[in-house]
Amino acid sequence: MKYTSCSIALIILAISMPRTLHGQSAKPLVELPLDFEKNLPVASIHVNGSPQLFILDSAAASCVMDDAAAAQVGLTASVRALSSGSGGMVTVGLARGTRLQLSGLEIGVENVVLTSLAGLGFQKAVHGIIGFPLFGKYVVEIDYPGKAVRIFTPGTFQAPQGAEIIPLWMTDGPTARGQLKLAGQEAIEADFQLDTGSSHVLTVCKPFVDRHQLLKKVAGLRAERTSGLGGTSPDMVGRIESVTLGSNCIRNPEVRFSTHAAGTLSTPRFGANLGNAFLNTWIVIFDIPGSRLMLRR
Image (cartoon, rainbow, N blue to C red; front, side, top):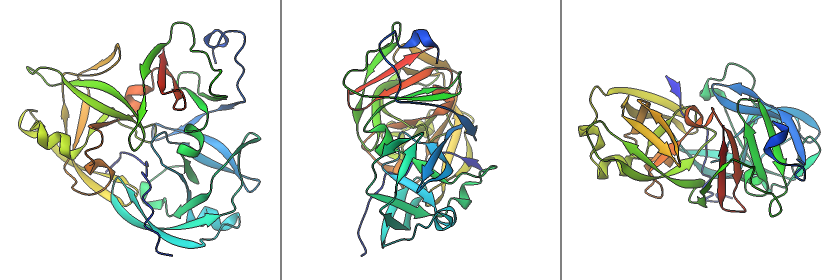
């Protein structure tokens, strides 16, 4: 069983550095070292003053915390709700009045989602997931080669010299136009959700798979199940000729084709989920307020 994504496009149905990268003027509000767990970027975030390890997940709609870890820092659910993850729907708790800090930087969040992360099979202690409350407010640079994360003020942030700028918009998460190409076929354009909470190259959503009849066009597919919030989901896995975003291309990647009729990968709002196995050779800058993605080797 392989872990695909912890992204949680939250649906609440209320039941109750390289120094030369930035030029001389841009200084980060915060710079922190990154660790990686199952190819997912992890950083320390203080929750009510207590340091906790959080996955930096660009496609997560909210902030999630493991319920057992939350109880240790005094968080309790004030209301219950339903949330949708890649595995399907799950009942969660919502905790209010939580204080989140990233190296002293306050991250405003109305509710923290409480649920068990035990089913995701992490090898080290991972206490939570942070998504849109961070990525939606700031410019977030994930320096995969340098193992660092840097947070900048949006609006005045200047694109680094030599960086490729790609238009970005929001669907469930930050989304950009890319291409996938099957052997012997014309390239197919697709809207890629950019998901640092996914360990894979690309997971194609079921409606896109069905519309383009991809399971009939890829040879040597094998069935697997992947774990995410809400449980496991079925995939077919096989190699295609290439995946491209901007001028950046990975050839002969292993791609996952979702066959799950529930959960976040059953959406028609974007075509596929682009993950860390594509992104992790670059310095990746998410500027959601400025509607742009920046990539630099």
